[in-house]
Length: 304
Image 1 (cartoon, rainbow, N blue to C red):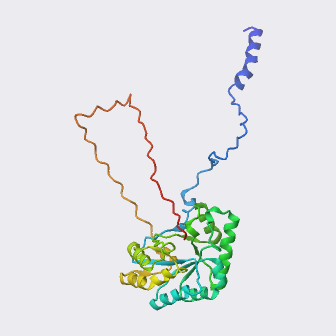
Image 2 (image 1 turned 120 degrees about the vertical axis):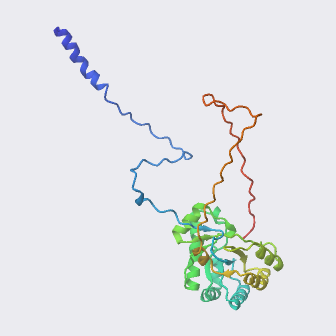
Image 3 (image 1 turned 135 degrees about the horizontal axis):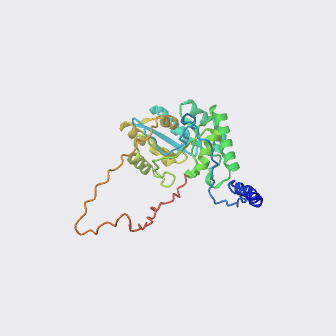
């Protein structure tokens, strides 16, 4: 081999080696887009035993209970005369209820709130001044709940552990936030006699008796005379039907997960002689997906 050929081979070797080493390109700067989904960074897979537990259940409209247990709830009080009258009815029958109270009313009638707690009823928060919390910022919601929490604790000597948002308006994020901030369970309802709208005792009684079932959370208001007028016959009829009255917190302590729904077994399709043959797997006809509109929902405009 000639000297010139050896030198040419030696000159080619560094070039060939450098071509086998991958070059890492500098990534482009990310473009900010508030609508783009957030992608979590890759992390090491941990053993199953270190996985975080499932999030606790925070919000309840009714409960799945083993027995005829129900929770009567009263909103917007306390009222100077109607609430004590209602407490007399409950005491006479040995029944327990839950009172979701407006904070400024708690501050005005602390002795009534103390009586509630002393007689075994649950005292709970319904905000300070009954605004639509879902339209408020975090600071405003915190003020509404904190002032009410403090007023109830001062009047009754116990802190509330449940709350009901006025009008039922509370976002999913607010529900989780209030649970983390105050430890609240958020309580809605499954029986609503619309007593705030239809001020008629017979209507209130009829709606409650028709709709109540085991595990129900019944929404009423102790600031309306027609509602309190309906309570003696309503309570007696519920007792006669075998229902047992507990506080909301007692009811949700009995709540059990619903059993999974069984999956329906699809029926085999039997081809008929008039059906066209199915396309081959090599040239399958494209499937056209048709969007099915979601069922319309009716927004609730009731004031609760």
